[in-house]
Image 1: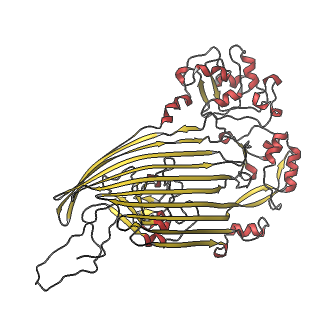
Image 2: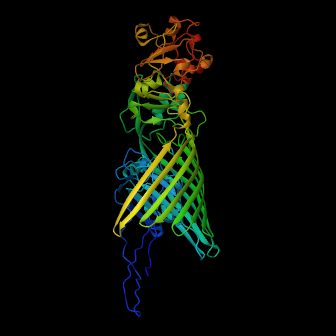
Length: 632
């Protein structure tokens, strides 16, 4: 008899027994065994039990106390490298976004950034299994690590637990930037920081030996001040001088968003011949998290069927600091996640087991600006190239429908396993980079006088639509055979096939096409012609990289003719270059019949187009009749 044999997830659990002849009065009993050597598979597994998870030190953020943090303790895994996205660290030399995540055997992957969607309460985890490489054909989706979380279920006895995790400012030391902020009077003292997680679990039998239930709940509240951000800003006197010199109200509105340095501890900058005092400023970014997590599991034995149901709930709210981390621009970040999973493990006979699982899950995440009409982002060289302004709104909603079935058949020395899986994802998302416009100036004088931003390569504005429908489907199928040739040698054979459809939104990308060749129109301004044309001192420009691009408006180049009246553009195409283009020049060399020049709002409507506009109509130097509508 063997006792205390571990049954681990994601691997074959084999207990070989060796019987020897003995006398009728002799009893052989093994009360404790050594660690079993895995001889049935070449898969490299790292298993962590519930005790390992509860003893894991917690930390703030989206992985606040997550058992996934245990991955960095496994061999062949390193912590998140800089400059890459994903979750779980780099496994076997792959990037973190090559990892695959499951919870109780069903998919938990985020289509956007390739990470996990669900936050699983640490005290509700029965086991965390990490397969680092050489995994069998049953596992796929990703080439990195296979992260498998198994949650707890009830037993024949009622059990419960409670927990409180706390971390606050009294446990922390100060970094040098924070010390400087206190010394400079930016903050009154040690930044606030309070992180608390409260929760509990309960589980037991509804019907002994037949029906079990388990539930857990956790509430997280984290608030305080986070990372220190060093800035260079005008003093109160300096900002007042800039407001007085501003060319128009649009510039004044931009300057009103600038932070104020507490003292003049840097050399002043020169603006229109005047010395403007500036100084160092340190802003402490906010730290905020409110989170509700819950899980309910139930299992029921019905003859040869083991039926299970899982419900997981996450509702989270964060503050996302952006750019200069000013409170007026920081974004709210709501996160919602729901997961329902059903399973039926059917023991057909002593050699065949069928495992059927169904899932529906919903995940949403958004980054929302506090302003309904947001100003443009402004970056100035002689103020340290710090960006003042908001970020971009974005959101994603992922609905996952999944069915998977796996059959295991033991026959002699063979263990056959085969099955299939179908996933369907409904995934609308929105993100339009530079939606408010990015203006990069070499010096403050350019901004104050409302001149055209001189850092052309960074002065851009996103146009078109930021909506994209990432709806797609995936089909998986596999077959494998583990042949136990000898008690110490097993041959693993397997074959896996995966097919992913392209996102539905990919069909609409032809509308964003910009061609480099098109038919010669009745009127077309090219880069060479504009270079020789007489220009006025217009401050309205369009900037596109590369330096000359032909923008076509025709059915075959992706711009349907039915949209032409909305654009108000009559010719087939126009060429724009990487320098300033004069609106009045187009008026002089074209006529309204052939080229009703802009409607720069129409140019803005062109998908995937970057362009620059002045801050106000006062900056327009052409004829009044030529002022673009958006500046009226």
